[in-house]
Length: 210
Image 1: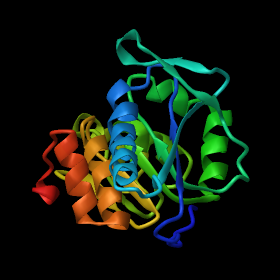
Image 2: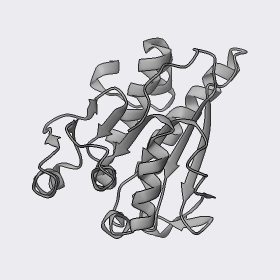
Image 3: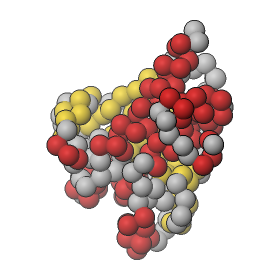
Image 4: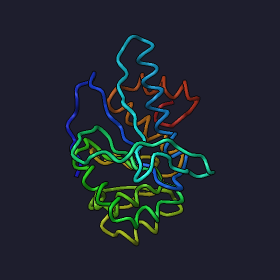
């Protein structure tokens, strides 16, 4: 299971976003842009950007996402290297990714060195296969909530919410909910003011930031 200590407010937070073939493009780029915008805003005021951002994938440097757009990705890091947040995207390719034992093993082991693990949309199915959601509240895309419950009765599946925060594990339902997830994490660790500024820059409105 992921660790949950708080790092110092000025410590850089390494965030890895796991992508795979046929990943949902916005599941990757939505939260990624939230953290990138937070970096820009902090840098503009003379501060040190709080996030180090990486997209990672198995076996390849480029991943073809939904819509046919290629995403440049780094190879999967060694599981023992510490990081702040491991974020798992979802998308049409999630079932094939869930059936990959080596990838599931990497997620399970990588989570042990992360302060927290998060999923966007159907990325929850990968966390479920890795056993990371056992005994927790979690959500996913509303079209697949029943499927998640049926496949994994050990998970308390939650309907009608954008983000479910269980401390060291956070899940987001739906595609655009990845943006809500990113804003939620910025708000949680750096405060509402920065989260609101990011939302303004992105011209995005989530209920908890209005």
